[in-house]
Length: 209
Image 1 (spheres, one colour):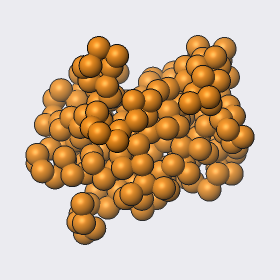
Image 2: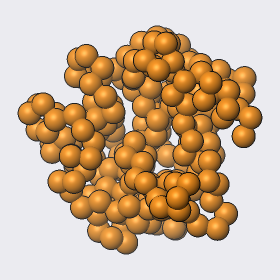
Image 3: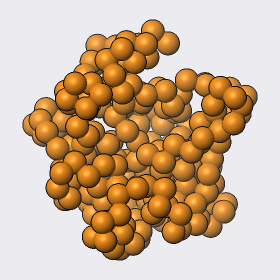
């Protein structure tokens, strides 16, 4: 992918606005992974992408000063009540100053280093509104990973209307648009790339990979 025109400039958004319920209510993005907070590890991995983003935003609803210390802009949900990933998408699209927004969660620190490049290639090739990663399952199938998305920023109006009507499910919203699904199951792709940490035990298991 050699298209570096302004029309394909990407901003990245780290989703760190959840309750961390399965971690006992802790702020998940600030939990240590290999010596650094998860959100900071995620930021560093974004900077190592084969197609690095032009800028990085963090969506967080607690400890905003701690997140800001990583050097990225920090924005809380515009929707109240910890409304889920779509609330983060909405915040990111509202503050994105490039035509495309890449979303990644803070709890999956081993995501592919060519994530942005491959999603962009599929988005352009299929003339899609968004591109979504899919990860291999143990049975050989691939499962969509809807929090790993590349979105056209002009989807803001659609998402605003969807959430104002009470919509909160990512799948229900993405189904309204042309979506390119990218399977990360090729030779050389790590089967653990999309492993995430919902509990402290899972976080320890991730560290050992």
